[in-house]
Image 1 (tube, rainbow, N blue to C red):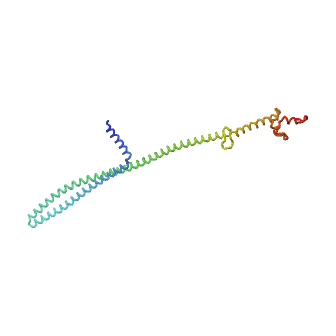
Image 2 (image 1 turned 180 degrees about the horizontal axis):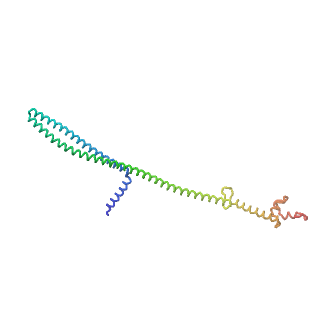
Image 3 (image 1 turned 45 degrees about the vertical axis):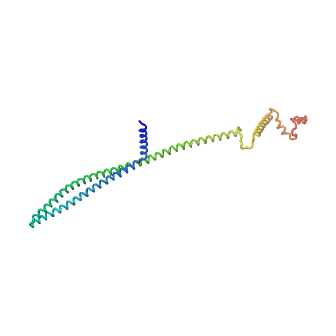
Length: 266
């Protein structure tokens, strides 16, 4: 196949597809119905023209028959008056009119036959046009209903696709929300355990270290005090110093014991 033939085939297929998209069957049916009405109107005009010609011939026949009858009477009157020549002339003219009347009657018969044929064709065409009109309206109604159903289905399809996208968006939002909630809970736990510093306060690294050391000393003093109470060890140094109000700050514990009298108990 040559390039030109291929291009021609492609062009025709594209044009046919474009025409299919542009064509509305309802408009095509209406156009066909209009053409049939125009044809029916022409047939009816033809019937009317033939009927008019037939009627004109009938009038001519009636007129010639009247003239022929008059000539026959005149011929009788001429014979009665002894004018045989006039009677013969009148009869001759009457015979000529009768010949014309015969031709007109033949023409009238032909016109009448043609009129009957056209009338029958008009009736048949009228029946076909009426049937086509009924079928046309049925097809148009069916096409309109199918078109509306197609649009509804397309709308539902679009809504379904959109709702699917919305569902995915909601799922992503829920997943992200759950992830953020889990992250926030984990950060709160880390802050509470001290694994993460709370940058919202005024504490720095040195202060945090000092606080941890102080907390450890308090625990050791508490352990020593408990041992002293149950007799498992001496009282903690800090507790002894705290129980002697007369002692000066910074005085060693040995000097305090030396100042005691020999008879004093512990």
